[in-house]
Image (cartoon, rainbow, N blue to C red; front, top):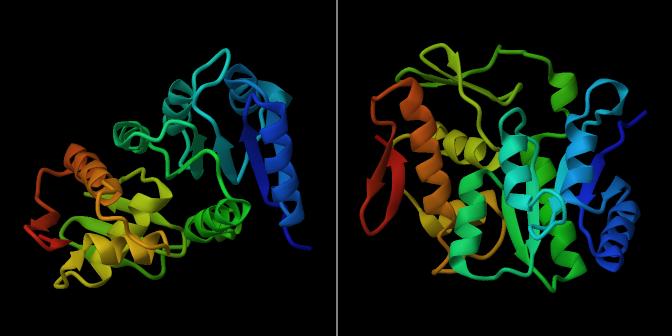
Length: 236
């Protein structure tokens, strides 16, 4: 029997929340609705039997109780569950700020149903639906300097210490390590990882690569990702 895919929808507008829940239900997913940041926080972090686990989170930023930005930061302290933000904030600095906090994707309101479905399906594919059954199998590994990637378990270590990454960060790193001599343009990285058309002014790739560098540097000061100016990125 196929395991249920559980999606938490954090949206204070009842109409939008209901639309998202219906979209997810029609895709065969199991949606749970939270109408405030505080309610979502209780579902995710309450002690005992009240705590729930989800395969993906769809959330607004302007939420009563606990703002979306604070909720993202709290989630990222303990989990790499995919987070897709749906917000009326459309400024570049808002998108970059949320991605820096650890969100995996950002859609502005009003949104198209088809795009929401595509982004959710893409995030679930990247994250790996079979991750709960994958265990910690480490038979196949990718190595580069002091970094090791275990694709079956979607785990990464640096100097034998675990590296916690978001789904997008993992996919970017994995792609670069698989072809360490190849220079990937921002456009090609975006199209390969996000599976969509790249918008030249979008700073998404730069933000994710910057986050990767910072996380790796905490464990190893060796340079791993090199910027090829005017082109893109490759392994150093």
